[in-house]
Image (cartoon, rainbow, N blue to C red; front, side, top):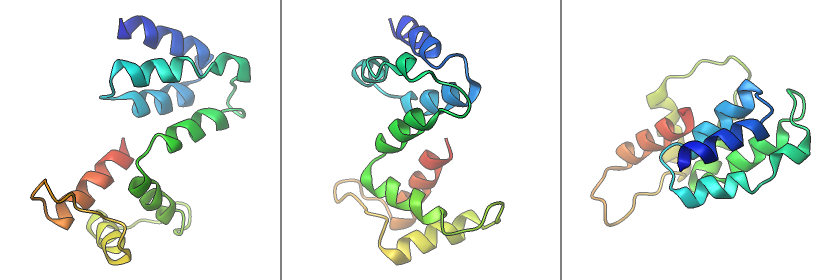
Length: 122
C-alpha cells in the first residue's frame, strides 16, 4: 500500500528529482499515517518545478523534531561550502544546549548528537 501512496507522491512532485529526494528523506522510516499526510498535502496544486520547491522543503523542515530544527538552523551560520568536522559541529550543538538526552535511553550527549547529525544528513 505504501508503494501506491509513494507513486502518487512522486506524481505530485512533478518528477522533480530534488522534490522527490526531499520528500523521500522525510518519509524514510515513517508510518503510513505520515505518508498519507504528505499525499494529502496536494503538492500537485503548487505547480512544482525546480524554482517552486519551497512548499516541499518547508514541509520537510517542519517534519523535523524541534531540537533537530535548531541544529539545522545552526548550520546556516557557516558560509556555503565551509568544511567542518562532524565531531566539532556536534560539540558546538552540545555547547549551545541544543542536544537533549532522553532520560529513558541511557545514551550520552555525544551519542544523541551523532543521531541528530545522521538524521539531518539523510
